[in-house]
Length: 263
Image 1 (cartoon, helix red, strand yellow):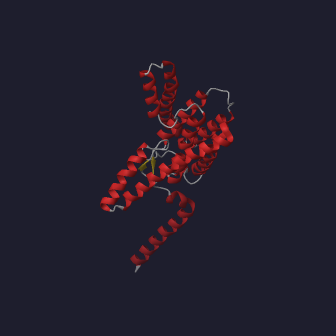
Image 2 (cartoon, one colour):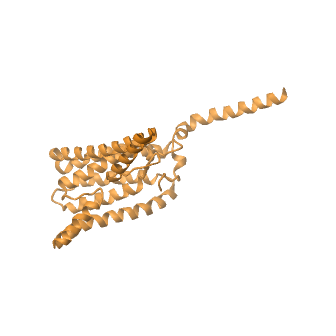
Image 3 (cartoon, one colour):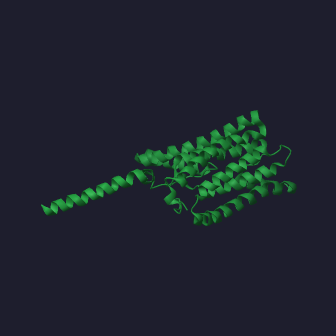
């Protein structure tokens, strides 16, 4: 009887400890597996912004793609082949900006983590928001290259920083990988009925549609607001920044030194 009572007491003590712990860290416990910056909502919002950037720069800021560099390198090589050397720099500058953004984001992510104030992911979104506001206020007479280089730079940082949503590799600035993954997982689902593969196919398809929605919104807003249309992306970035900031300062504060999956 004494042993049974002791066991009951120990079990009760453990239960009380769990009850005490859950109210304090319940949200952190629920999100323990993945950080807020790895959640699907965050990646869908960033994908919308990525599409918006592309529609904005191609539609009104010089006809250059800022999201990725494949098309720009293609046009660069074509101009070289056609002897239009004066246009080479027009496509080379975004490439250099993109490369610089990738390198610097890799460096900053490691250095900022030491201060344990905010995650690099949150700081980056805040930096994007400030950049977008400044670009929206930039006079129309200023060279388009300022906007192109700025967005190429932050697109590279975004692409390199946000890599996986709940363990699923997802780019947030272009669609090529999503097309491949959508088709690949669709075939796996049809062949085996694998529910996980079917879900992943839908997620990648959803990212493609979200990207297109961003491009569509940018195009429509350009007709109305012209150069200030980029503020549309700023609203989405503000929403992301606030949510990540709350996570960093409250329920994920103890995870500030944790590295997101994919890094």
